[in-house]
Amino acid sequence: VIQEWNGLNDHIKDVADRFAKQGYLALAPDHYHGVIAEEPDEAGKMFMALNIKETEEELRGGIEFLFEETNNPVGVTGFCMGGALALFAACQNGSKVGACVDFYGIHPNVEYDWDSLTAPLLGIWAEHDDMVNPQLPDFARELASRKHDFHFKTYAGTSHAFFNDTNTEGHDVDASTDAWDLALNWFEKYL
Image 1 (cartoon, rainbow, N blue to C red):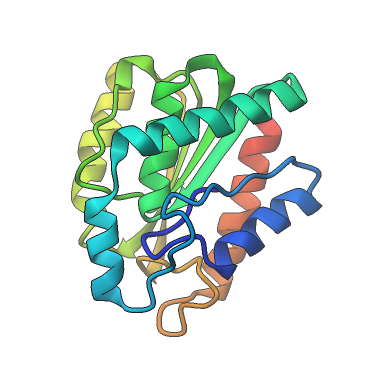
Image 2: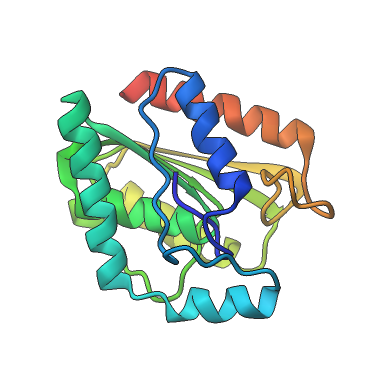
């Protein structure tokens, strides 16, 4: 479970706990190494300063650990920055990743190796998300041209970070409940 742009906060820890309660061995890596941004400006600076190579190594280590512990392909998921990193990790780790769920993922410094992606991809998007939505037609084109197994679901009336229940302005209970069920079903189907 990969963090949003503001760090490994209580919301992400809660999502990891929710996966654990479903029977998954869940891991939530801390890519900011203990720092949690309190303000959007601080989060934006940390987001842009993220060392992608170092983060890829941390993700690979987490995937290796989970793969060795379970002897099964791993599911990766994340939110905002973490959604982009989940897809990136799925592209970088081949058959060790058995499924990927990207919740409105975005990071301008992440490049996807579409030819290396083997995991089925579920993309969960918000209707009103000017940061993420412009990239979606390209994503769909890249995936379809490779006959890749993917499904995109856009939630009407929602905005970026609608799944985050600490997001007092944008949390959407109904969309979050449905997206959670969709993610669980995706992992159940492919893992």
